[in-house]
Image 1 (cartoon, rainbow, N blue to C red):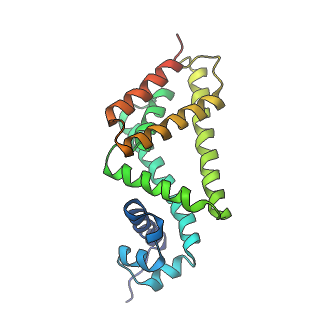
Image 2: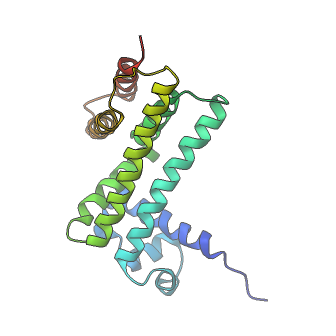
Image 3: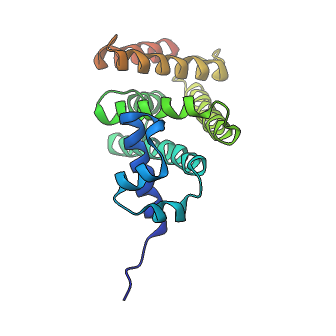
Length: 199
């Protein structure tokens, strides 16, 4: 009897192979044939799920975002039952920052996707949609913090979302370059969130 293939799991398996290649070599090394070799499957299997490289990359961008989000949620669930907005934002920053080898590889992969997106409208739109969702979620969390009396009432959640995510992005680059240590980066995020707190 032929083995039943879990198609969702197979697509994820291929996406993980792409992320390993992108984190190690950039996306120039993520040709379908290279992805098949990295994933340990045939080229035909990769082509069965993704007809083109750009189609594959669109899926991988969503997969990467989902993977990080799952880890943030898992960390929150393991922490406290009803996390504050600040705790959630701190957990989010810790997952987004390249604090260890796994997250450094993800950061390098994310940068490779951004560079690849130039001139590929479909990929640009996926990245823009992800960015809009993330900014909206952070702004919502800041609003929730204001309603709970955790953050100052006079803050503009939209601007604060842009500022926080831009800071995390900059700190991420600093970490990759060795300009900052992980503890310094986390302390900077905590310092920023403390400045938003209601007095």
